[in-house]
Image (cartoon, rainbow, N blue to C red; front, side):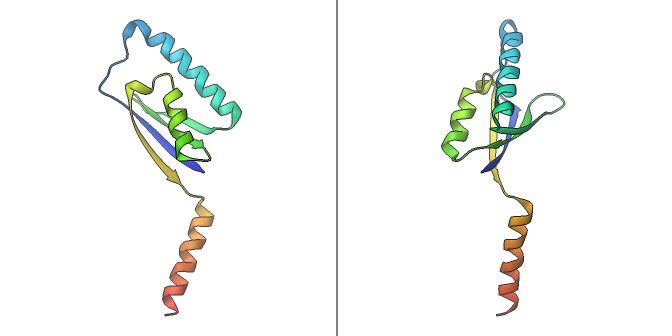
Length: 102
């Protein structure tokens, strides 16, 4: 399953004395997740935060991955399951075809 994972800066500021180390650890964490295929792509937002498309076989594993993210406590998180466009549109087409034949 694929998930859209959105991170927005939270209420807890990053301690300046740990900022560089946290960012380096985060970059290493993201590189490892991209290399092992558990994340497809990541982007940052101008001004802070960002998003990723992640892969997981369960919601629980998504949570486990998030909790292992080095900067997890400093963000607010939104996680949305996402669908393959072609497959989901085919299902909607079939649904409306059934409705139209009633």
